[in-house]
Amino acid sequence: MQIHLMPQKSPEWFAVRKLKLTASHAQEIAACGKGLDTYVNNIVADAIAQKEDEKYSNFDMERGKDMEDEARTIYELETGNEVKEVGFIELNESVGISPDGIVGDDGGVEIKRHDNNVFTKLVCSGDIDSKYEWQIYMSLFVTGRKWWDYVAYNPNYRRSIYIKRIYPDTEKFAKLQKGIEIGILKTKEHFEKMNKFIKNEA
Image (cartoon, rainbow, N blue to C red; front, side):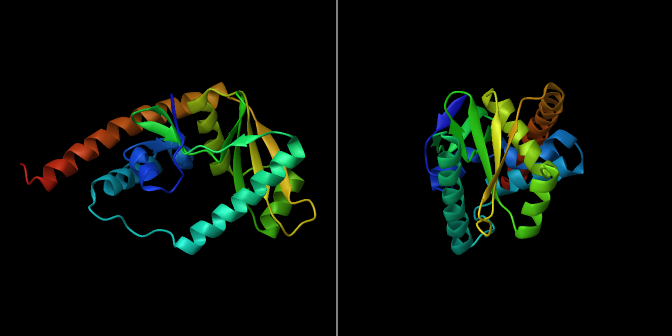
């Protein structure tokens, strides 16, 4: 495992993520279905295309980063945990994650900004959206850490963060392992086919 400290969304960050399965698509990876096929296709497309599709505006990215920084600061004050920001954590040449932060030697955080309805539903039910839950399980899988805090943020409430701690789950890890193995094979196959096409080889 290797930890990279470059800023997220920087050119170096995009470069180290190329052709890697990441936690933002952990649900598709674990399901091993059509979603994984689509994800693999996107990974290869982004890696080989000479120009990337424009996906986010600078305004949206900066606003999201500001919200994340606010939530991280409140989390630190409320829990006493110091959060270290990192760029990317590689499990190997094919798999990695971009966490919102790591805590000491044992923990990490995943921060999400929710609207009023989603935030209220989360606080009352305690049920995290499955795609975010899988994202955390993959973060635990890649890092081997003991826990990961899901931090939901909404500045419209007097108490603006909701925290739920997630622990490793061997059954979910097994599904991720299977999906990762299949995803790596499919990524290599797609990459080779696209390279042959680009080079105009038979």
